[in-house]
Image (cartoon, rainbow, N blue to C red):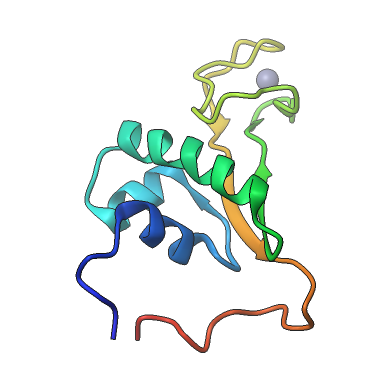
Length: 113
Ligand SMILES: [Zn+2]
C-alpha cells in the first residue's frame, strides 16, 4: 500500500522507473500541468544526481521532418521548432529512470498495483 503522503516528486520517480515518458504523459498521470511536471523534474534530476542506485535518462527531442536531434538542449522543456528545417513537428523529449548496479535491473515488484 502506498502512503497517501507521497509527494508528486516521489510519484514521478515511481512512474518513470524502468520506462520513458514525456512530460505530457507524466502530467496526465499525475493530474497536474506540464509546467509543474517540468519543475518537479528539475528537482528529480538533482536528487538522482546524488543517488547511487538510480540514474536519470533523457531521450532528447527530435524533429520528425529532418531527424535533427536536440542533443545539446539542457532544458527539460520541449522545443517548439526545429532550428534546422523550421518544422514544428517535434517529438517531445522523454524521461526515464534506470536502476544502476546491485544486480536487479527491474524494479516492478513494488508497483502500486
Ligand atoms: Zn527539422
